[in-house]
Image 1: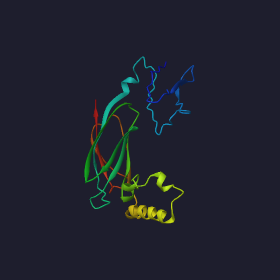
Image 2: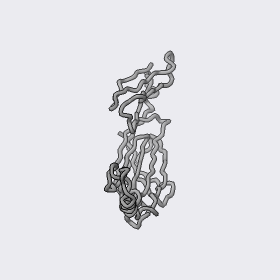
Image 3: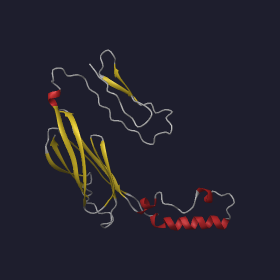
Image 4: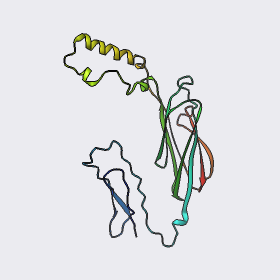
Length: 216
């Protein structure tokens, strides 16, 4: 047996969810019709939960309810002598948090995710990011010129050179800079585990994550 509950979307579309095969469904076929949506979405995501009935409760008895909290990041890597600007992305079973311009040696994150998992499932925690350098600070910076000004076909050679010089010196300090990737982090835990844990990034010198797993 199967059941589909109404879906919600911020776009004027609804995902189509169809049990397959219809006579004895074993999977859910999902179609998200984005073709022709105006304006085209810049980003789109969906979390889809599906399940089958369990009249005897044999599978339900194996469900573990857990709350995972990413409490803190320890930024052991020092890229800019204490003046770091870290951009960090942390995901727990596909639920992501984003932090920008973190500095210092440690920062609270306090990302909590509630999970209902079968005993054979896993808690997956993933993290990545980068330390932003000068070039990142200039991305999207206002040059002081409008599009009409720099595309004017009547610009003289002297005016073009003046615009080029101004923009060159505006960006001069960033030409030899690169954003630095911080190490990838990935770990799996059983849904039955409880306690406080710490894990290191792929490069152990970059950072550590502290997280807790508790029942709920």
